Image (cartoon, rainbow, N blue to C red; front, side, top):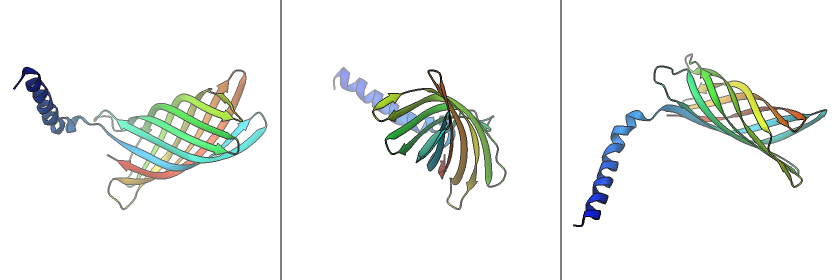
Length: 170
């Protein structure tokens, strides 16, 4: 056997043997996917949108199970307009039996395409919600509401969004 083959075999064995040991290092968290409804207010114009919302939360510290880090993405659609939000930030949560209320504050970017014009304002999101454990193991149902504020050039836009869907906990 050549030295290259021996090195490759050793790396494959080390990788395969380290997977069971690293399972204890995988942090806890959840993944959420749901349907969403949004309302955007730009100066005096109000528009409503329908779309989707998804997030992944990682709870990295075993001692601080109330503190998590969230990556959130959503898409909203209306005739001639598409809007995508990409956000990240901390989340605080507590469990009370089957209920798990939470609040979060996130920042990121919003991508808007309106009649061929694309712009990407910065976004700040503050919101919260509640998860309710359902009868399937490791699954919950979520109700979530958010206030999303964007600022592009000299214009400020206020968006509200609500979503509901399924949460898988790991």
